[in-house]
Length: 133
Image 1 (cartoon, one colour):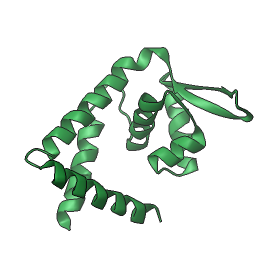
Image 2 (cartoon, one colour; image 1 turned 45 degrees about the horizontal axis):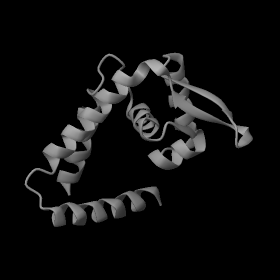
Image 3 (spheres, helix red, strand yellow; image 1 turned 60 degrees about the vertical axis):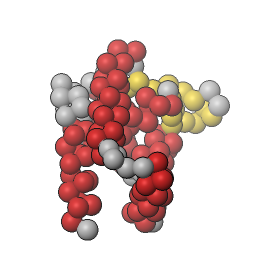
């Protein structure tokens, strides 16, 4: 199982270098990826999508907001909550994250058949479920 830990560390390092100018933490990168896919999310939804504790989401959001990468606005469907979204100038940052992620997945899955990819996805989902339990 040592390979699993090496894989986790390797993926973390690759993603850390996706946007070197921003020096994003792993949590910040996960938030940016989630917002890049879904435009705007509540902090609760960000926690659910990224598997991150509420306190970590709050700290990461504040850091990203200070750097002008995200902002929040009142949720029109629920006046008690806010939605988080990326700011207009971060398209290059999002594109770099997505390019790195896509390239990394392509490298990792090279030589795998579609069936093997499906099986791996199911196994990884079980690992994530166990981790979050």
